[in-house]
Length: 256
Image (cartoon, rainbow, N blue to C red; front, side, top):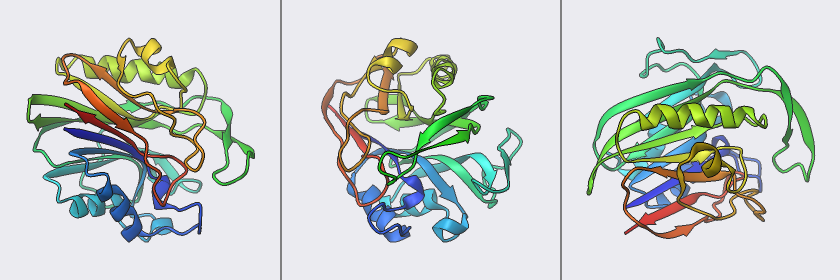
């Protein structure tokens, strides 16, 4: 069983600045994951060619099931609104958020919405050589799938938490509490914007991977995590491959 997580930076390469659907699909497919968690993924955005990127990755992987879940509806950095419970999951509106792609059947989907912090915080500029800009926070979302894994039902979830220190830990406790309530073994994957061992200590969940993932070219810290809850197979290997897009490395877990 292989699970993987990748913050794709809407498919943008820091080498040439281009967004290529073919390159995104090839990179994600190369991970050979049974379930792939995606963050910073676009649906029908002009900057990424008007493509539903999660759908494109799912087609490339030959997936049995997939879903994109927006945190924002509209254009990031321009006109947008927070995604809401009443939004149609099959909508074609432009959106930005997270996605899950599974080669196994999915029994049910679950969504946890997370409010934005009310303060601004410094954020590193991708490819900006240490430059930071002060940005307002955005709403976030967690997406979970109940999958028919080989060892039985498994809840696999993805999220991309706030960059505001402290608020991301509040969000993490909200997400892990909601996921634990389903009573299934669970793996939470994603860009938590929290370094090192802090996510495991804050949530009480087990850290399943310890490897540096950011920044992608020369990673110096881990902000992309895999947390486990309940009875799970043993993790046999962990890797963080560099791929030809994004400012993050992917996080890959092989379970025995």
